[in-house]
Length: 399
Image (cartoon, rainbow, N blue to C red; front, side, top):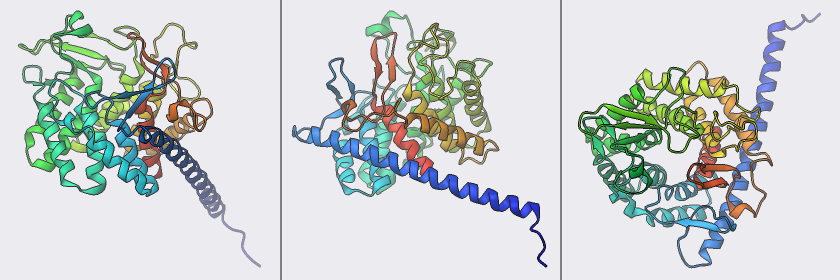
Protein backbone atom coordinates (compact mmCIF):
# COMPACT_ATOMS: atom_id res chain seq x y z
CA UNK A 1 0.00 0.00 0.00
CA UNK A 2 1.43 3.39 -1.08
CA UNK A 3 1.95 6.06 1.47
CA UNK A 4 0.08 9.31 0.97
CA UNK A 5 2.34 12.13 -0.32
CA UNK A 6 3.42 14.48 2.37
CA UNK A 7 1.46 17.75 2.47
CA UNK A 8 4.72 19.64 1.97
CA UNK A 9 5.38 17.75 -1.27
CA UNK A 10 1.91 18.56 -2.56
CA UNK A 11 2.43 22.19 -1.71
CA UNK A 12 5.76 22.26 -3.50
CA UNK A 13 4.33 20.60 -6.60
CA UNK A 14 1.44 23.06 -6.64
CA UNK A 15 3.81 25.99 -6.19
CA UNK A 16 6.05 24.81 -9.01
CA UNK A 17 3.03 24.31 -11.24
CA UNK A 18 1.70 27.79 -10.47
CA UNK A 19 5.15 29.34 -10.92
CA UNK A 20 5.59 27.63 -14.28
CA UNK A 21 2.15 28.83 -15.34
CA UNK A 22 2.90 32.41 -14.31
CA UNK A 23 6.19 32.31 -16.19
CA UNK A 24 4.45 31.12 -19.35
CA UNK A 25 1.90 33.92 -19.09
CA UNK A 26 4.69 36.43 -18.45
CA UNK A 27 6.67 35.24 -21.48
CA UNK A 28 3.60 35.45 -23.71
CA UNK A 29 2.90 38.96 -22.42
CA UNK A 30 6.45 40.09 -23.12
CA UNK A 31 6.57 38.51 -26.56
CA UNK A 32 3.26 40.05 -27.62
CA UNK A 33 4.31 43.51 -26.51
CA UNK A 34 7.72 43.23 -28.16
CA UNK A 35 5.98 42.21 -31.38
CA UNK A 36 3.62 45.19 -31.08
CA UNK A 37 6.49 47.60 -30.41
CA UNK A 38 8.48 46.26 -33.35
CA UNK A 39 5.48 46.58 -35.65
CA UNK A 40 4.77 50.17 -34.63
CA UNK A 41 8.39 51.24 -34.94
CA UNK A 42 8.75 49.58 -38.34
CA UNK A 43 5.84 51.71 -39.53
CA UNK A 44 7.42 54.83 -38.04
CA UNK A 45 10.65 54.03 -39.87
CA UNK A 46 8.83 53.44 -43.15
CA UNK A 47 7.23 56.88 -42.81
CA UNK A 48 10.51 58.67 -42.16
CA UNK A 49 12.44 56.65 -44.76
CA UNK A 50 9.95 57.75 -47.40
CA UNK A 51 11.19 61.33 -46.89
CA UNK A 52 14.82 60.41 -47.50
CA UNK A 53 15.74 62.05 -44.19
CA UNK A 54 16.62 60.90 -40.69
CA UNK A 55 13.66 62.23 -38.70
CA UNK A 56 13.73 61.69 -34.96
CA UNK A 57 10.17 61.34 -33.58
CA UNK A 58 9.35 62.83 -30.16
CA UNK A 59 5.61 63.42 -29.78
CA UNK A 60 2.51 64.61 -31.62
CA UNK A 61 1.76 68.21 -32.52
CA UNK A 62 -1.67 69.58 -31.68
CA UNK A 63 -2.78 68.90 -35.25
CA UNK A 64 -1.90 65.21 -34.92
CA UNK A 65 1.27 65.31 -37.00
CA UNK A 66 4.51 63.93 -35.60
CA UNK A 67 6.98 66.35 -34.05
CA UNK A 68 10.59 65.52 -34.94
CA UNK A 69 13.60 66.92 -33.07
CA UNK A 70 17.19 67.81 -33.84
CA UNK A 71 20.29 66.43 -32.17
CA UNK A 72 20.38 69.11 -29.43
CA UNK A 73 16.91 68.32 -28.07
CA UNK A 74 17.19 66.53 -24.71
CA UNK A 75 14.94 63.79 -26.10
CA UNK A 76 17.04 63.05 -29.19
CA UNK A 77 18.57 59.83 -27.80
CA UNK A 78 15.37 57.99 -26.93
CA UNK A 79 14.26 56.86 -30.40
CA UNK A 80 17.75 55.62 -31.34
CA UNK A 81 17.85 53.87 -27.97
CA UNK A 82 14.51 52.19 -28.67
CA UNK A 83 15.91 50.91 -31.97
CA UNK A 84 18.88 49.35 -30.15
CA UNK A 85 16.57 47.65 -27.66
CA UNK A 86 14.33 46.31 -30.43
CA UNK A 87 17.35 44.88 -32.20
CA UNK A 88 18.34 43.21 -28.94
CA UNK A 89 14.83 41.86 -28.39
CA UNK A 90 14.08 40.68 -31.93
CA UNK A 91 17.46 40.03 -33.63
CA UNK A 92 15.99 41.84 -36.64
CA UNK A 93 18.88 43.44 -38.51
CA UNK A 94 16.56 46.18 -39.78
CA UNK A 95 16.66 47.61 -36.27
CA UNK A 96 20.45 47.26 -36.13
CA UNK A 97 20.87 49.17 -39.39
CA UNK A 98 18.46 51.88 -38.35
CA UNK A 99 19.89 52.10 -34.82
CA UNK A 100 23.31 52.81 -36.28
CA UNK A 101 21.83 55.38 -38.65
CA UNK A 102 19.80 57.24 -36.06
CA UNK A 103 22.56 57.10 -33.47
CA UNK A 104 25.07 58.56 -35.89
CA UNK A 105 22.64 61.39 -36.69
CA UNK A 106 22.97 62.85 -33.18
CA UNK A 107 26.73 62.46 -32.71
CA UNK A 108 27.21 66.22 -32.37
CA UNK A 109 25.41 66.03 -29.03
CA UNK A 110 28.71 64.85 -27.53
CA UNK A 111 30.09 68.38 -27.69
CA UNK A 112 27.18 70.21 -26.05
CA UNK A 113 28.34 72.02 -22.93
CA UNK A 114 25.17 74.07 -22.37
CA UNK A 115 23.15 70.90 -21.91
CA UNK A 116 22.92 68.79 -18.76
CA UNK A 117 20.97 66.06 -20.56
CA UNK A 118 23.78 64.62 -22.67
CA UNK A 119 23.45 61.55 -20.46
CA UNK A 120 19.96 60.94 -21.83
CA UNK A 121 21.02 61.87 -25.35
CA UNK A 122 24.27 59.93 -25.63
CA UNK A 123 23.71 57.22 -23.03
CA UNK A 124 20.47 55.90 -24.50
CA UNK A 125 21.84 55.91 -28.05
CA UNK A 126 25.61 55.48 -28.12
CA UNK A 127 25.57 53.75 -24.73
CA UNK A 128 23.30 50.97 -25.92
CA UNK A 129 25.17 50.82 -29.22
CA UNK A 130 28.47 50.33 -27.36
CA UNK A 131 26.93 47.70 -25.10
CA UNK A 132 25.57 45.67 -28.00
CA UNK A 133 28.31 46.04 -30.62
CA UNK A 134 31.54 47.00 -28.87
CA UNK A 135 32.10 49.63 -31.55
CA UNK A 136 34.91 51.83 -30.23
CA UNK A 137 33.65 54.85 -32.14
CA UNK A 138 30.65 54.72 -29.80
CA UNK A 139 32.78 54.50 -26.66
CA UNK A 140 34.78 57.52 -27.82
CA UNK A 141 31.56 59.52 -28.13
CA UNK A 142 30.54 58.49 -24.60
CA UNK A 143 33.81 59.74 -23.13
CA UNK A 144 33.65 63.02 -25.03
CA UNK A 145 30.04 63.55 -23.90
CA UNK A 146 31.14 62.97 -20.32
CA UNK A 147 33.82 65.63 -20.74
CA UNK A 148 31.16 68.02 -21.98
CA UNK A 149 28.87 67.21 -19.05
CA UNK A 150 31.73 67.63 -16.58
CA UNK A 151 32.12 71.28 -17.61
CA UNK A 152 28.82 71.92 -15.86
CA UNK A 153 30.10 70.72 -12.50
CA UNK A 154 30.07 73.50 -9.89
CA UNK A 155 32.63 72.67 -7.17
CA UNK A 156 31.17 74.96 -4.49
CA UNK A 157 27.79 73.28 -4.69
CA UNK A 158 29.25 69.89 -5.54
CA UNK A 159 26.63 69.45 -8.25
CA UNK A 160 26.18 69.55 -12.01
CA UNK A 161 24.20 72.66 -12.95
CA UNK A 162 21.10 71.64 -14.86
CA UNK A 163 19.97 74.76 -16.71
CA UNK A 164 21.71 77.89 -17.85
CA UNK A 165 20.02 80.97 -16.41
CA UNK A 166 20.95 83.60 -18.97
CA UNK A 167 17.82 83.39 -21.08
CA UNK A 168 14.22 82.21 -21.27
CA UNK A 169 11.95 81.30 -18.40
CA UNK A 170 14.90 80.03 -16.36
CA UNK A 171 16.25 83.59 -16.26
CA UNK A 172 12.85 84.86 -15.15
CA UNK A 173 12.83 82.52 -12.16
CA UNK A 174 15.89 84.25 -10.67
CA UNK A 175 17.88 81.05 -10.23
CA UNK A 176 21.68 81.05 -10.11
CA UNK A 177 22.61 77.35 -10.16
CA UNK A 178 19.45 75.24 -10.55
CA UNK A 179 19.73 71.49 -10.18
CA UNK A 180 16.76 69.32 -11.11
CA UNK A 181 16.18 65.80 -9.86
CA UNK A 182 16.13 64.64 -13.50
CA UNK A 183 19.89 65.19 -13.53
CA UNK A 184 20.39 61.95 -11.60
CA UNK A 185 19.62 60.18 -14.87
CA UNK A 186 22.73 61.64 -16.50
CA UNK A 187 25.16 60.22 -13.95
CA UNK A 188 25.23 56.79 -15.61
CA UNK A 189 27.14 58.39 -18.49
CA UNK A 190 29.86 59.54 -16.08
CA UNK A 191 30.19 56.12 -14.45
CA UNK A 192 30.54 54.52 -17.88
CA UNK A 193 33.10 57.11 -18.97
CA UNK A 194 35.34 56.23 -16.00
CA UNK A 195 35.21 52.56 -17.01
CA UNK A 196 36.06 53.41 -20.61
CA UNK A 197 38.74 56.04 -20.02
CA UNK A 198 40.21 55.14 -16.65
CA UNK A 199 39.68 58.75 -15.58
CA UNK A 200 38.17 58.66 -12.10
CA UNK A 201 37.28 62.37 -12.26
CA UNK A 202 34.01 61.42 -13.94
CA UNK A 203 33.21 58.99 -11.13
CA UNK A 204 34.02 61.59 -8.46
CA UNK A 205 31.76 64.17 -10.09
CA UNK A 206 28.90 61.65 -10.28
CA UNK A 207 29.27 60.69 -6.62
CA UNK A 208 29.54 64.31 -5.50
CA UNK A 209 26.35 65.17 -7.36
CA UNK A 210 24.53 62.11 -6.03
CA UNK A 211 25.59 62.87 -2.45
CA UNK A 212 24.58 66.55 -2.50
CA UNK A 213 21.28 65.72 -4.17
CA UNK A 214 20.65 63.07 -1.53
CA UNK A 215 21.20 65.65 1.18
CA UNK A 216 19.21 68.55 -0.26
CA UNK A 217 16.59 67.30 -2.72
CA UNK A 218 14.46 65.00 -0.53
CA UNK A 219 11.78 65.52 2.07
CA UNK A 220 11.50 63.41 5.24
CA UNK A 221 8.67 61.34 3.71
CA UNK A 222 10.94 60.19 0.85
CA UNK A 223 9.52 62.42 -1.88
CA UNK A 224 11.71 64.87 -3.73
CA UNK A 225 11.71 68.48 -4.80
CA UNK A 226 12.04 69.11 -8.48
CA UNK A 227 14.48 72.05 -8.39
CA UNK A 228 17.11 73.03 -5.83
CA UNK A 229 18.86 76.32 -6.58
CA UNK A 230 22.37 76.76 -5.19
CA UNK A 231 24.62 79.76 -4.78
CA UNK A 232 27.42 78.97 -7.26
CA UNK A 233 30.00 80.82 -5.14
CA UNK A 234 29.19 79.62 -1.61
CA UNK A 235 27.38 76.39 -2.49
CA UNK A 236 24.51 77.25 -0.13
CA UNK A 237 20.93 76.33 -0.99
CA UNK A 238 18.97 79.38 -2.14
CA UNK A 239 15.55 77.79 -2.72
CA UNK A 240 13.65 74.56 -3.29
CA UNK A 241 11.01 74.82 -5.98
CA UNK A 242 9.37 73.20 -8.98
CA UNK A 243 9.33 73.86 -12.69
CA UNK A 244 7.01 71.15 -13.97
CA UNK A 245 5.00 70.19 -10.90
CA UNK A 246 1.80 71.66 -9.48
CA UNK A 247 3.56 73.61 -6.72
CA UNK A 248 6.91 73.84 -4.96
CA UNK A 249 5.81 71.45 -2.22
CA UNK A 250 3.80 69.10 -4.42
CA UNK A 251 4.78 65.62 -5.61
CA UNK A 252 5.62 65.88 -9.30
CA UNK A 253 5.38 62.23 -10.28
CA UNK A 254 8.00 61.94 -12.97
CA UNK A 255 10.51 63.54 -10.62
CA UNK A 256 9.91 60.69 -8.19
CA UNK A 257 10.48 58.18 -11.00
CA UNK A 258 13.75 59.89 -11.97
CA UNK A 259 14.86 59.63 -8.34
CA UNK A 260 14.00 55.93 -8.06
CA UNK A 261 15.74 55.09 -11.32
CA UNK A 262 18.70 57.40 -10.74
CA UNK A 263 19.59 56.11 -7.30
CA UNK A 264 19.11 52.52 -8.42
CA UNK A 265 21.84 53.16 -10.99
CA UNK A 266 24.01 54.96 -8.43
CA UNK A 267 23.80 52.00 -6.05
CA UNK A 268 24.53 49.53 -8.84
CA UNK A 269 27.63 51.53 -9.81
CA UNK A 270 29.01 52.32 -6.34
CA UNK A 271 27.58 49.88 -3.82
CA UNK A 272 26.70 52.83 -1.54
CA UNK A 273 23.76 51.58 0.51
CA UNK A 274 22.47 55.14 1.06
CA UNK A 275 21.59 55.32 -2.63
CA UNK A 276 19.66 52.06 -2.52
CA UNK A 277 17.84 53.17 0.62
CA UNK A 278 16.73 56.38 -1.09
CA UNK A 279 15.51 54.58 -4.20
CA UNK A 280 13.46 52.27 -2.00
CA UNK A 281 12.20 55.11 0.23
CA UNK A 282 10.96 57.12 -2.75
CA UNK A 283 9.34 54.09 -4.36
CA UNK A 284 7.62 53.09 -1.12
CA UNK A 285 6.35 56.67 -0.81
CA UNK A 286 4.80 56.46 -4.28
CA UNK A 287 3.48 52.92 -3.80
CA UNK A 288 1.74 53.85 -0.55
CA UNK A 289 0.54 57.28 -1.63
CA UNK A 290 -3.22 57.53 -0.99
CA UNK A 291 -3.74 59.05 -4.45
CA UNK A 292 -2.03 56.19 -6.32
CA UNK A 293 -4.68 54.81 -8.72
CA UNK A 294 -5.63 51.16 -8.67
CA UNK A 295 -4.03 50.62 -12.08
CA UNK A 296 -0.72 52.09 -10.79
CA UNK A 297 -0.43 54.75 -13.51
CA UNK A 298 0.27 57.88 -11.44
CA UNK A 299 -1.36 61.25 -11.88
CA UNK A 300 1.01 63.81 -13.38
CA UNK A 301 1.33 65.30 -9.88
CA UNK A 302 0.16 63.35 -6.85
CA UNK A 303 -0.80 66.62 -5.12
CA UNK A 304 -2.77 68.13 -7.99
CA UNK A 305 -6.08 69.54 -6.73
CA UNK A 306 -8.54 67.82 -9.09
CA UNK A 307 -7.60 64.19 -8.38
CA UNK A 308 -9.18 61.83 -9.48
CA UNK A 309 -9.90 64.03 -12.51
CA UNK A 310 -6.27 64.92 -13.20
CA UNK A 311 -4.30 63.55 -16.14
CA UNK A 312 -2.19 60.43 -15.74
CA UNK A 313 1.46 60.32 -16.78
CA UNK A 314 2.39 57.12 -18.58
CA UNK A 315 6.05 58.16 -18.83
CA UNK A 316 6.30 58.08 -15.03
CA UNK A 317 4.86 54.59 -14.89
CA UNK A 318 7.15 53.22 -17.61
CA UNK A 319 10.24 54.66 -15.94
CA UNK A 320 9.21 53.27 -12.56
CA UNK A 321 8.60 49.79 -14.00
CA UNK A 322 12.02 49.72 -15.64
CA UNK A 323 13.69 50.92 -12.44
CA UNK A 324 11.92 48.28 -10.37
CA UNK A 325 13.04 45.46 -12.65
CA UNK A 326 16.59 46.73 -12.26
CA UNK A 327 16.19 46.97 -8.47
CA UNK A 328 15.21 43.29 -8.45
CA UNK A 329 18.67 42.34 -9.74
CA UNK A 330 20.43 44.01 -6.80
CA UNK A 331 19.81 41.32 -4.19
CA UNK A 332 17.22 43.12 -2.12
CA UNK A 333 14.70 41.30 0.11
CA UNK A 334 11.78 43.08 -1.61
CA UNK A 335 12.75 41.73 -5.04
CA UNK A 336 9.76 39.46 -5.56
CA UNK A 337 7.25 42.08 -4.40
CA UNK A 338 8.85 44.78 -6.53
CA UNK A 339 8.91 42.51 -9.57
CA UNK A 340 5.22 41.79 -9.09
CA UNK A 341 4.50 45.52 -8.78
CA UNK A 342 6.41 46.21 -12.00
CA UNK A 343 4.45 43.43 -13.71
CA UNK A 344 1.21 45.12 -12.67
CA UNK A 345 2.38 48.47 -14.04
CA UNK A 346 3.32 46.83 -17.33
CA UNK A 347 -0.03 45.06 -17.56
CA UNK A 348 -1.77 48.43 -17.21
CA UNK A 349 0.52 50.10 -19.75
CA UNK A 350 -0.17 47.32 -22.23
CA UNK A 351 -3.93 47.57 -21.75
CA UNK A 352 -6.21 49.39 -24.24
CA UNK A 353 -6.40 52.31 -21.81
CA UNK A 354 -2.75 53.25 -22.45
CA UNK A 355 -1.33 51.21 -25.34
CA UNK A 356 -2.16 52.57 -28.75
CA UNK A 357 -4.09 50.70 -31.41
CA UNK A 358 -1.78 49.44 -34.14
CA UNK A 359 -1.03 51.92 -36.93
CA UNK A 360 -2.32 54.88 -34.91
CA UNK A 361 -0.99 57.43 -32.39
CA UNK A 362 1.68 58.57 -34.84
CA UNK A 363 3.11 55.04 -34.47
CA UNK A 364 4.14 55.78 -30.88
CA UNK A 365 3.50 52.85 -28.52
CA UNK A 366 1.84 54.50 -25.53
CA UNK A 367 -0.78 57.20 -25.06
CA UNK A 368 -1.44 59.68 -22.25
CA UNK A 369 1.90 61.07 -21.13
CA UNK A 370 2.37 64.54 -19.67
CA UNK A 371 5.42 66.59 -20.53
CA UNK A 372 4.92 69.85 -18.62
CA UNK A 373 1.51 71.21 -17.70
CA UNK A 374 2.90 74.53 -16.35
CA UNK A 375 4.53 75.14 -19.73
CA UNK A 376 1.65 73.75 -21.76
CA UNK A 377 3.98 71.27 -23.45
CA UNK A 378 3.13 67.70 -24.49
CA UNK A 379 0.00 67.52 -22.36
CA UNK A 380 -1.79 64.16 -22.74
CA UNK A 381 0.39 63.15 -25.68
CA UNK A 382 2.60 60.22 -26.62
CA UNK A 383 6.27 60.75 -25.77
CA UNK A 384 9.32 58.94 -27.10
CA UNK A 385 10.82 58.56 -23.63
CA UNK A 386 7.69 56.82 -22.36
CA UNK A 387 8.10 54.36 -25.23
CA UNK A 388 11.83 53.99 -24.52
CA UNK A 389 11.35 53.05 -20.87
CA UNK A 390 8.45 50.75 -21.78
CA UNK A 391 10.70 48.85 -24.20
CA UNK A 392 13.54 48.87 -21.67
CA UNK A 393 11.15 47.42 -19.09
CA UNK A 394 10.20 44.67 -21.55
CA UNK A 395 13.88 43.87 -21.97
CA UNK A 396 14.50 43.85 -18.23
CA UNK A 397 11.32 41.89 -17.59
CA UNK A 398 12.48 39.24 -20.04
CA UNK A 399 15.86 39.12 -18.29
